[in-house]
Length: 246
Image 1 (spheres, rainbow, N blue to C red):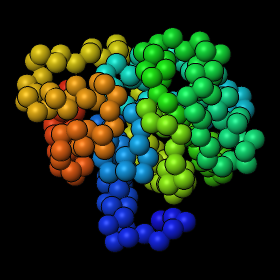
Image 2: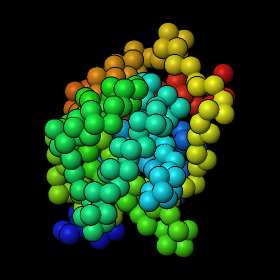
Image 3: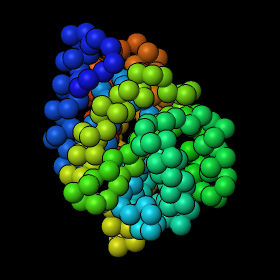
Image 4: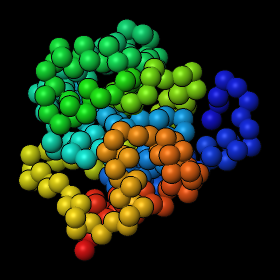
């Protein structure tokens, strides 16, 4: 990883862990856990949207990864989201395929323009910024676009730089899982929080997630380290979302 500034030993070790964990992604659950882990130190976000295909012809598919309840690929509107992604992709092309950021006013304007009224649209209206970058697969002859929506203000230089460096690993991780077969099966029911068997501590964390807090903010509020937060997060997502859990 080549950042534009010297990496400390701590940063170097963290980056190595991020890459290693990304190569182990095989399921949507794995991807969710990975994106909620240490990668948040460089790419803080609540919603990650990945899209791929032929943007010129409009033949694209997408996947949504988020810990926010109800924000899922199956529950979104293809008709409304596709034009939004097309617009973001066109701007990426016009900027010479460089990463760029949107602030709250820009993203709201785009959402209103395309009428994104599903649960994702509601959640996005609570986001304050978005970081966008893409990958052109010359061999596969298709493009991929990734949009990281955050409740924080405009991403800093570190996040923009990290988006460039980490994007190949994100693209690889996304490519290792099956895309959601939209409309081929009933949409999953919302998790039953009453029967999820969460501990009081896990419930407190879940409440903070639902309030839109980032992992770093949750760690500060609970007075624990971001590393110590990882196991409770894994337990929460396993209890709520892991397929086949009894």
